[in-house]
Length: 223
Ligand SMILES: Cc1ncc(COP(=O)(O)OP(=O)(O)O)c(N)n1
Ligand SMILES: Cc1nc(C(=O)O)sc1CCOP(=O)(O)O
Ligand SMILES: [Mg+2]
Image (cartoon, rainbow, N blue to C red; front, side, top):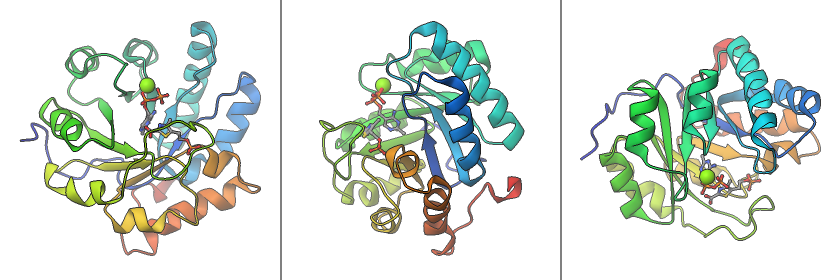
């Protein structure tokens, strides 16, 4: 049984934007600032940056997120999330213990877990106090070409856990709608926005997947 509330989270449904690996901080900030008004959540993820640069980039993004009223989640690193006062952390299978992150960041923190294609991981995450569960990859991903593949039925089948369900992996505006219909509350996207010819148009199209379905997109008050 999930131990956390099943009430809708304040960050709602919609686009869960994840940053690309970019060592050029002003360019990263400009790219993110352009599309942030369309996002329900932002994750800072830079797998190539050294800890010092990660800290600088995470702090700069935290300021941007504050300005736009969008919660910032840090990938992999609960200590960095705590150090910069981020809203939470995303943990994969090699990123440490959920209970330890919860103890460090507190009850209100957003702590997401990667479940890949594994419903048992989702159940365990729910029982351990995760804030959301993420499944993927649903489509071939240029960002993570070797990601394990997942089927949309996982989203439908995990509804009973009572947690927001995140879909990730190769998601574009053209293939996103089926995932929302299968139950995705958030679409986690890197390339589908940042590699698009028009990132703002792509981000708007992701958001429209939720608007057109008649669902409330929680973060329309900051556009
Ligand atoms: C929302 C979301 N879902 C999944 C992941 C992947 O996490 P992980 O498997 O730890 O891989 P890395 O992102 O650390 O390479 C994620 N970051 N965000
Ligand atoms: C970081 C990540 N995790 C995945 C998983 O399946 O757990 S897929 C993925 C890459 C997401 O980037 P893009 O939107 O460019 O495909
Ligand atoms: Mg990770």
